[in-house]
Image 1 (cartoon, rainbow, N blue to C red):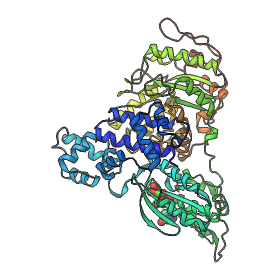
Image 2 (cartoon, protein in one colour; image 1 turned 180 degrees about the vertical axis):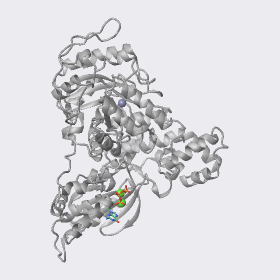
Image 3 (cartoon, protein in one colour; image 1 turned 30 degrees about the vertical axis):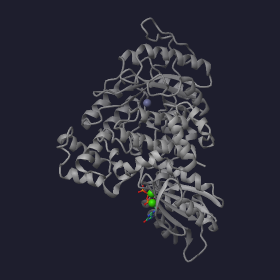
Image 4 (cartoon, rainbow, N blue to C red; image 1 turned 180 degrees about the horizontal axis):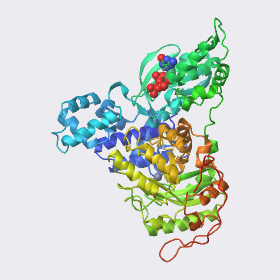
Length: 624
Ligand code: DGT
Ligand code: CA
Ligand code: CA
Ligand code: ZN
C-alpha cells in the first residue's frame, strides 16, 4: 500500500516541477500542491485507505489534486507528474538548485543557449555566454559561477543534502523491514554519521540467506527506484528517481555488527580500527573481528562487542571521523555525548501569531507538553521581518495570550520571547528598552547573505552585544544544497559570545543544521554555551529535536554544554541569575502575572531575589 510519506514525496515533486513550469513558487497551482502536502502530513490516517470522495473532503485538498492522489494510490503513477518529468528531466532540474538561478532564468538559459544540464551550464559559464542574456550580465554570471563552485555541484563531487536523503533511507528501511525473514535494516554510511550531505546511501540488511534474493528484488522494484546499476547476491546498487545512489548489502544476522561498523565508516575511522586490530594480531573486516588464522570471529554480531574486543567503548556514529575519538575511547576519556533524552526545553519556537507559523499557540504548547518539554520559549518574529513579524501592539496581545496559557498549563514554563532579526548592520527589532522586556530573545540572520566576512562579523558582534539577546539562532543562515550561508570570522564571534554569555543555537531543521558540527566543537572549546532548538513552526516539527541533537553530537557536545538540558528549576534559576535572559523578572513568568502599562510596555511587577547560580560555566570562570 502507498504510504502517506510516498504521497507527500509525490506532492513535493509536483511542487518542484510546477514551480519550474509556472515560473514562480507563488503560483496558485504550486500553493495548492503545498497545501495538499501539508494536509496529508497532518492527516493522521492512511490516505491510501480513503475513497476518492473522502480525499476530496480533506480540508486543503481540491478536486483535481484529490484525483491525482487516488490515481497515485491505485497505480503508483500520476499522469500529470509523468508529463512534467519528461518535460523537465532530472539533469535539467538540478540546475534549479543553484542559488541565483530561479525557474524563469533556467528556462530562459535553456531556450537561448540550449543548456540542459550542469555540464552544459559549466561550458556556458566557461565561454562567458551567460552575460549577454537578457537580464543577466557579467555580475550575475560571476555570482552563478561562484554558487556552482561553492555548492560543490560540479562533476562527481555532487552530494545530496541529508534532508533529501534521509526520508529516502527511512522509506527503504521501513519497506524492507516488513519482508519476512528480515531481522534488521540499518541506514549506515555518511547518513548514519549525520553528515549534512551524502554522496550516496548505504543500507545494511540482516536477513536469513534464503531471503536475500527477495530483498534484492524488492529494492529493484521499489517505487522510489529508477534504475539498477549493479546487482549481485549480497549487494545491489540502485539509483532513485531523484538521482540518489543507494548501495544495499545483505548479511547474515550474526554479522550485522561487523557490517554496520564497516559500512558506517568513515573510511578514515575504519583504517584506524583495522590498524589497531593488526597491532593486536587480529583482522577486522566487514564480516567480523578475527584472531589470526581463525575462521570463527572473536566478535561480529554487534558493534559494541567488536569495540569492546578492541579495548574501547562503543563509539557514537556521529563522531567516527578519526578526529581524536579513537584515542579518547582507548584512554577511557570519551565524553558522554548529549542525547535527546537529556533535553528538557525548546528555546526557538513559533506560533501562527507570526506569519510563517502554522499552529496556534495552544496547539504548540500542547505539542511541547506531549514532547516532554518542561519549558519553552515562544519566539515569534519581531517587527523587522516584514511579512512575518509582529508589531508592538500585536506582540503585547501575544504576550497576554501566552501568559494566560502559562496559567492554564502549569506543567510547562512558558518564556515569552522573540526571534529578533539581525539587520545588515547588526541592528535589531523594536528599541533597546522594549527588547529587554522579553524573557528570551534569539537573534538571527534572515537576509544580506553576500556581505564581506568582515561586515558579517561586525554585524554579529553588534547583535551579540545587545543585552536583550540570549542566543544567536542559525548562525550562518545556510540552507543546505540551496544557500551557502554567510561567511564570518568565527573566533572573534565565539569569543564575544563566551564573554557576554550569549548561547549558540544548534538549529534542528534538517535543511539548516546550523551551527555546523565544526562550529559547535569550536564553540564549546571557546566556552560558549549551546542551545539545541527545533525552530518549530508547526506541531509536527518538534521531532526536529533529535536532528539538532545528532548535529550537536557530531560536534562532540555533552549534556553539560547544552543549556536546555537543565531542569525547569535550574534553567529558570540560571537565567534569573545570569545575564541570560534578562527579562524574566519583568514579564512576570515566575510567579507573577503580567501587567502592561498604558504605553504598551510591560511593567516590572517586582524584583526577584536572585536564585542560586547553577553551573553551566566551566568551574573557575566568573559569571558576572
Ligand atoms: P559519502 O561520500 O557521503 O557516501 O560517504 P560514506 O562514508 O557513506 O562513503 P561510501 O558510501 O563510499 O562508503 C560507505 C562506507 O563503507 C564508508 O564510510 C566506509 C566503508 N568503505 C567504503 N569503501 C571503503 C574502503 O575502500 N576502505 C574502507 N576501509 N572502508 C570503506
Ligand atoms: Ca555513502
Ligand atoms: Ca556507498
Ligand atoms: Zn525561527
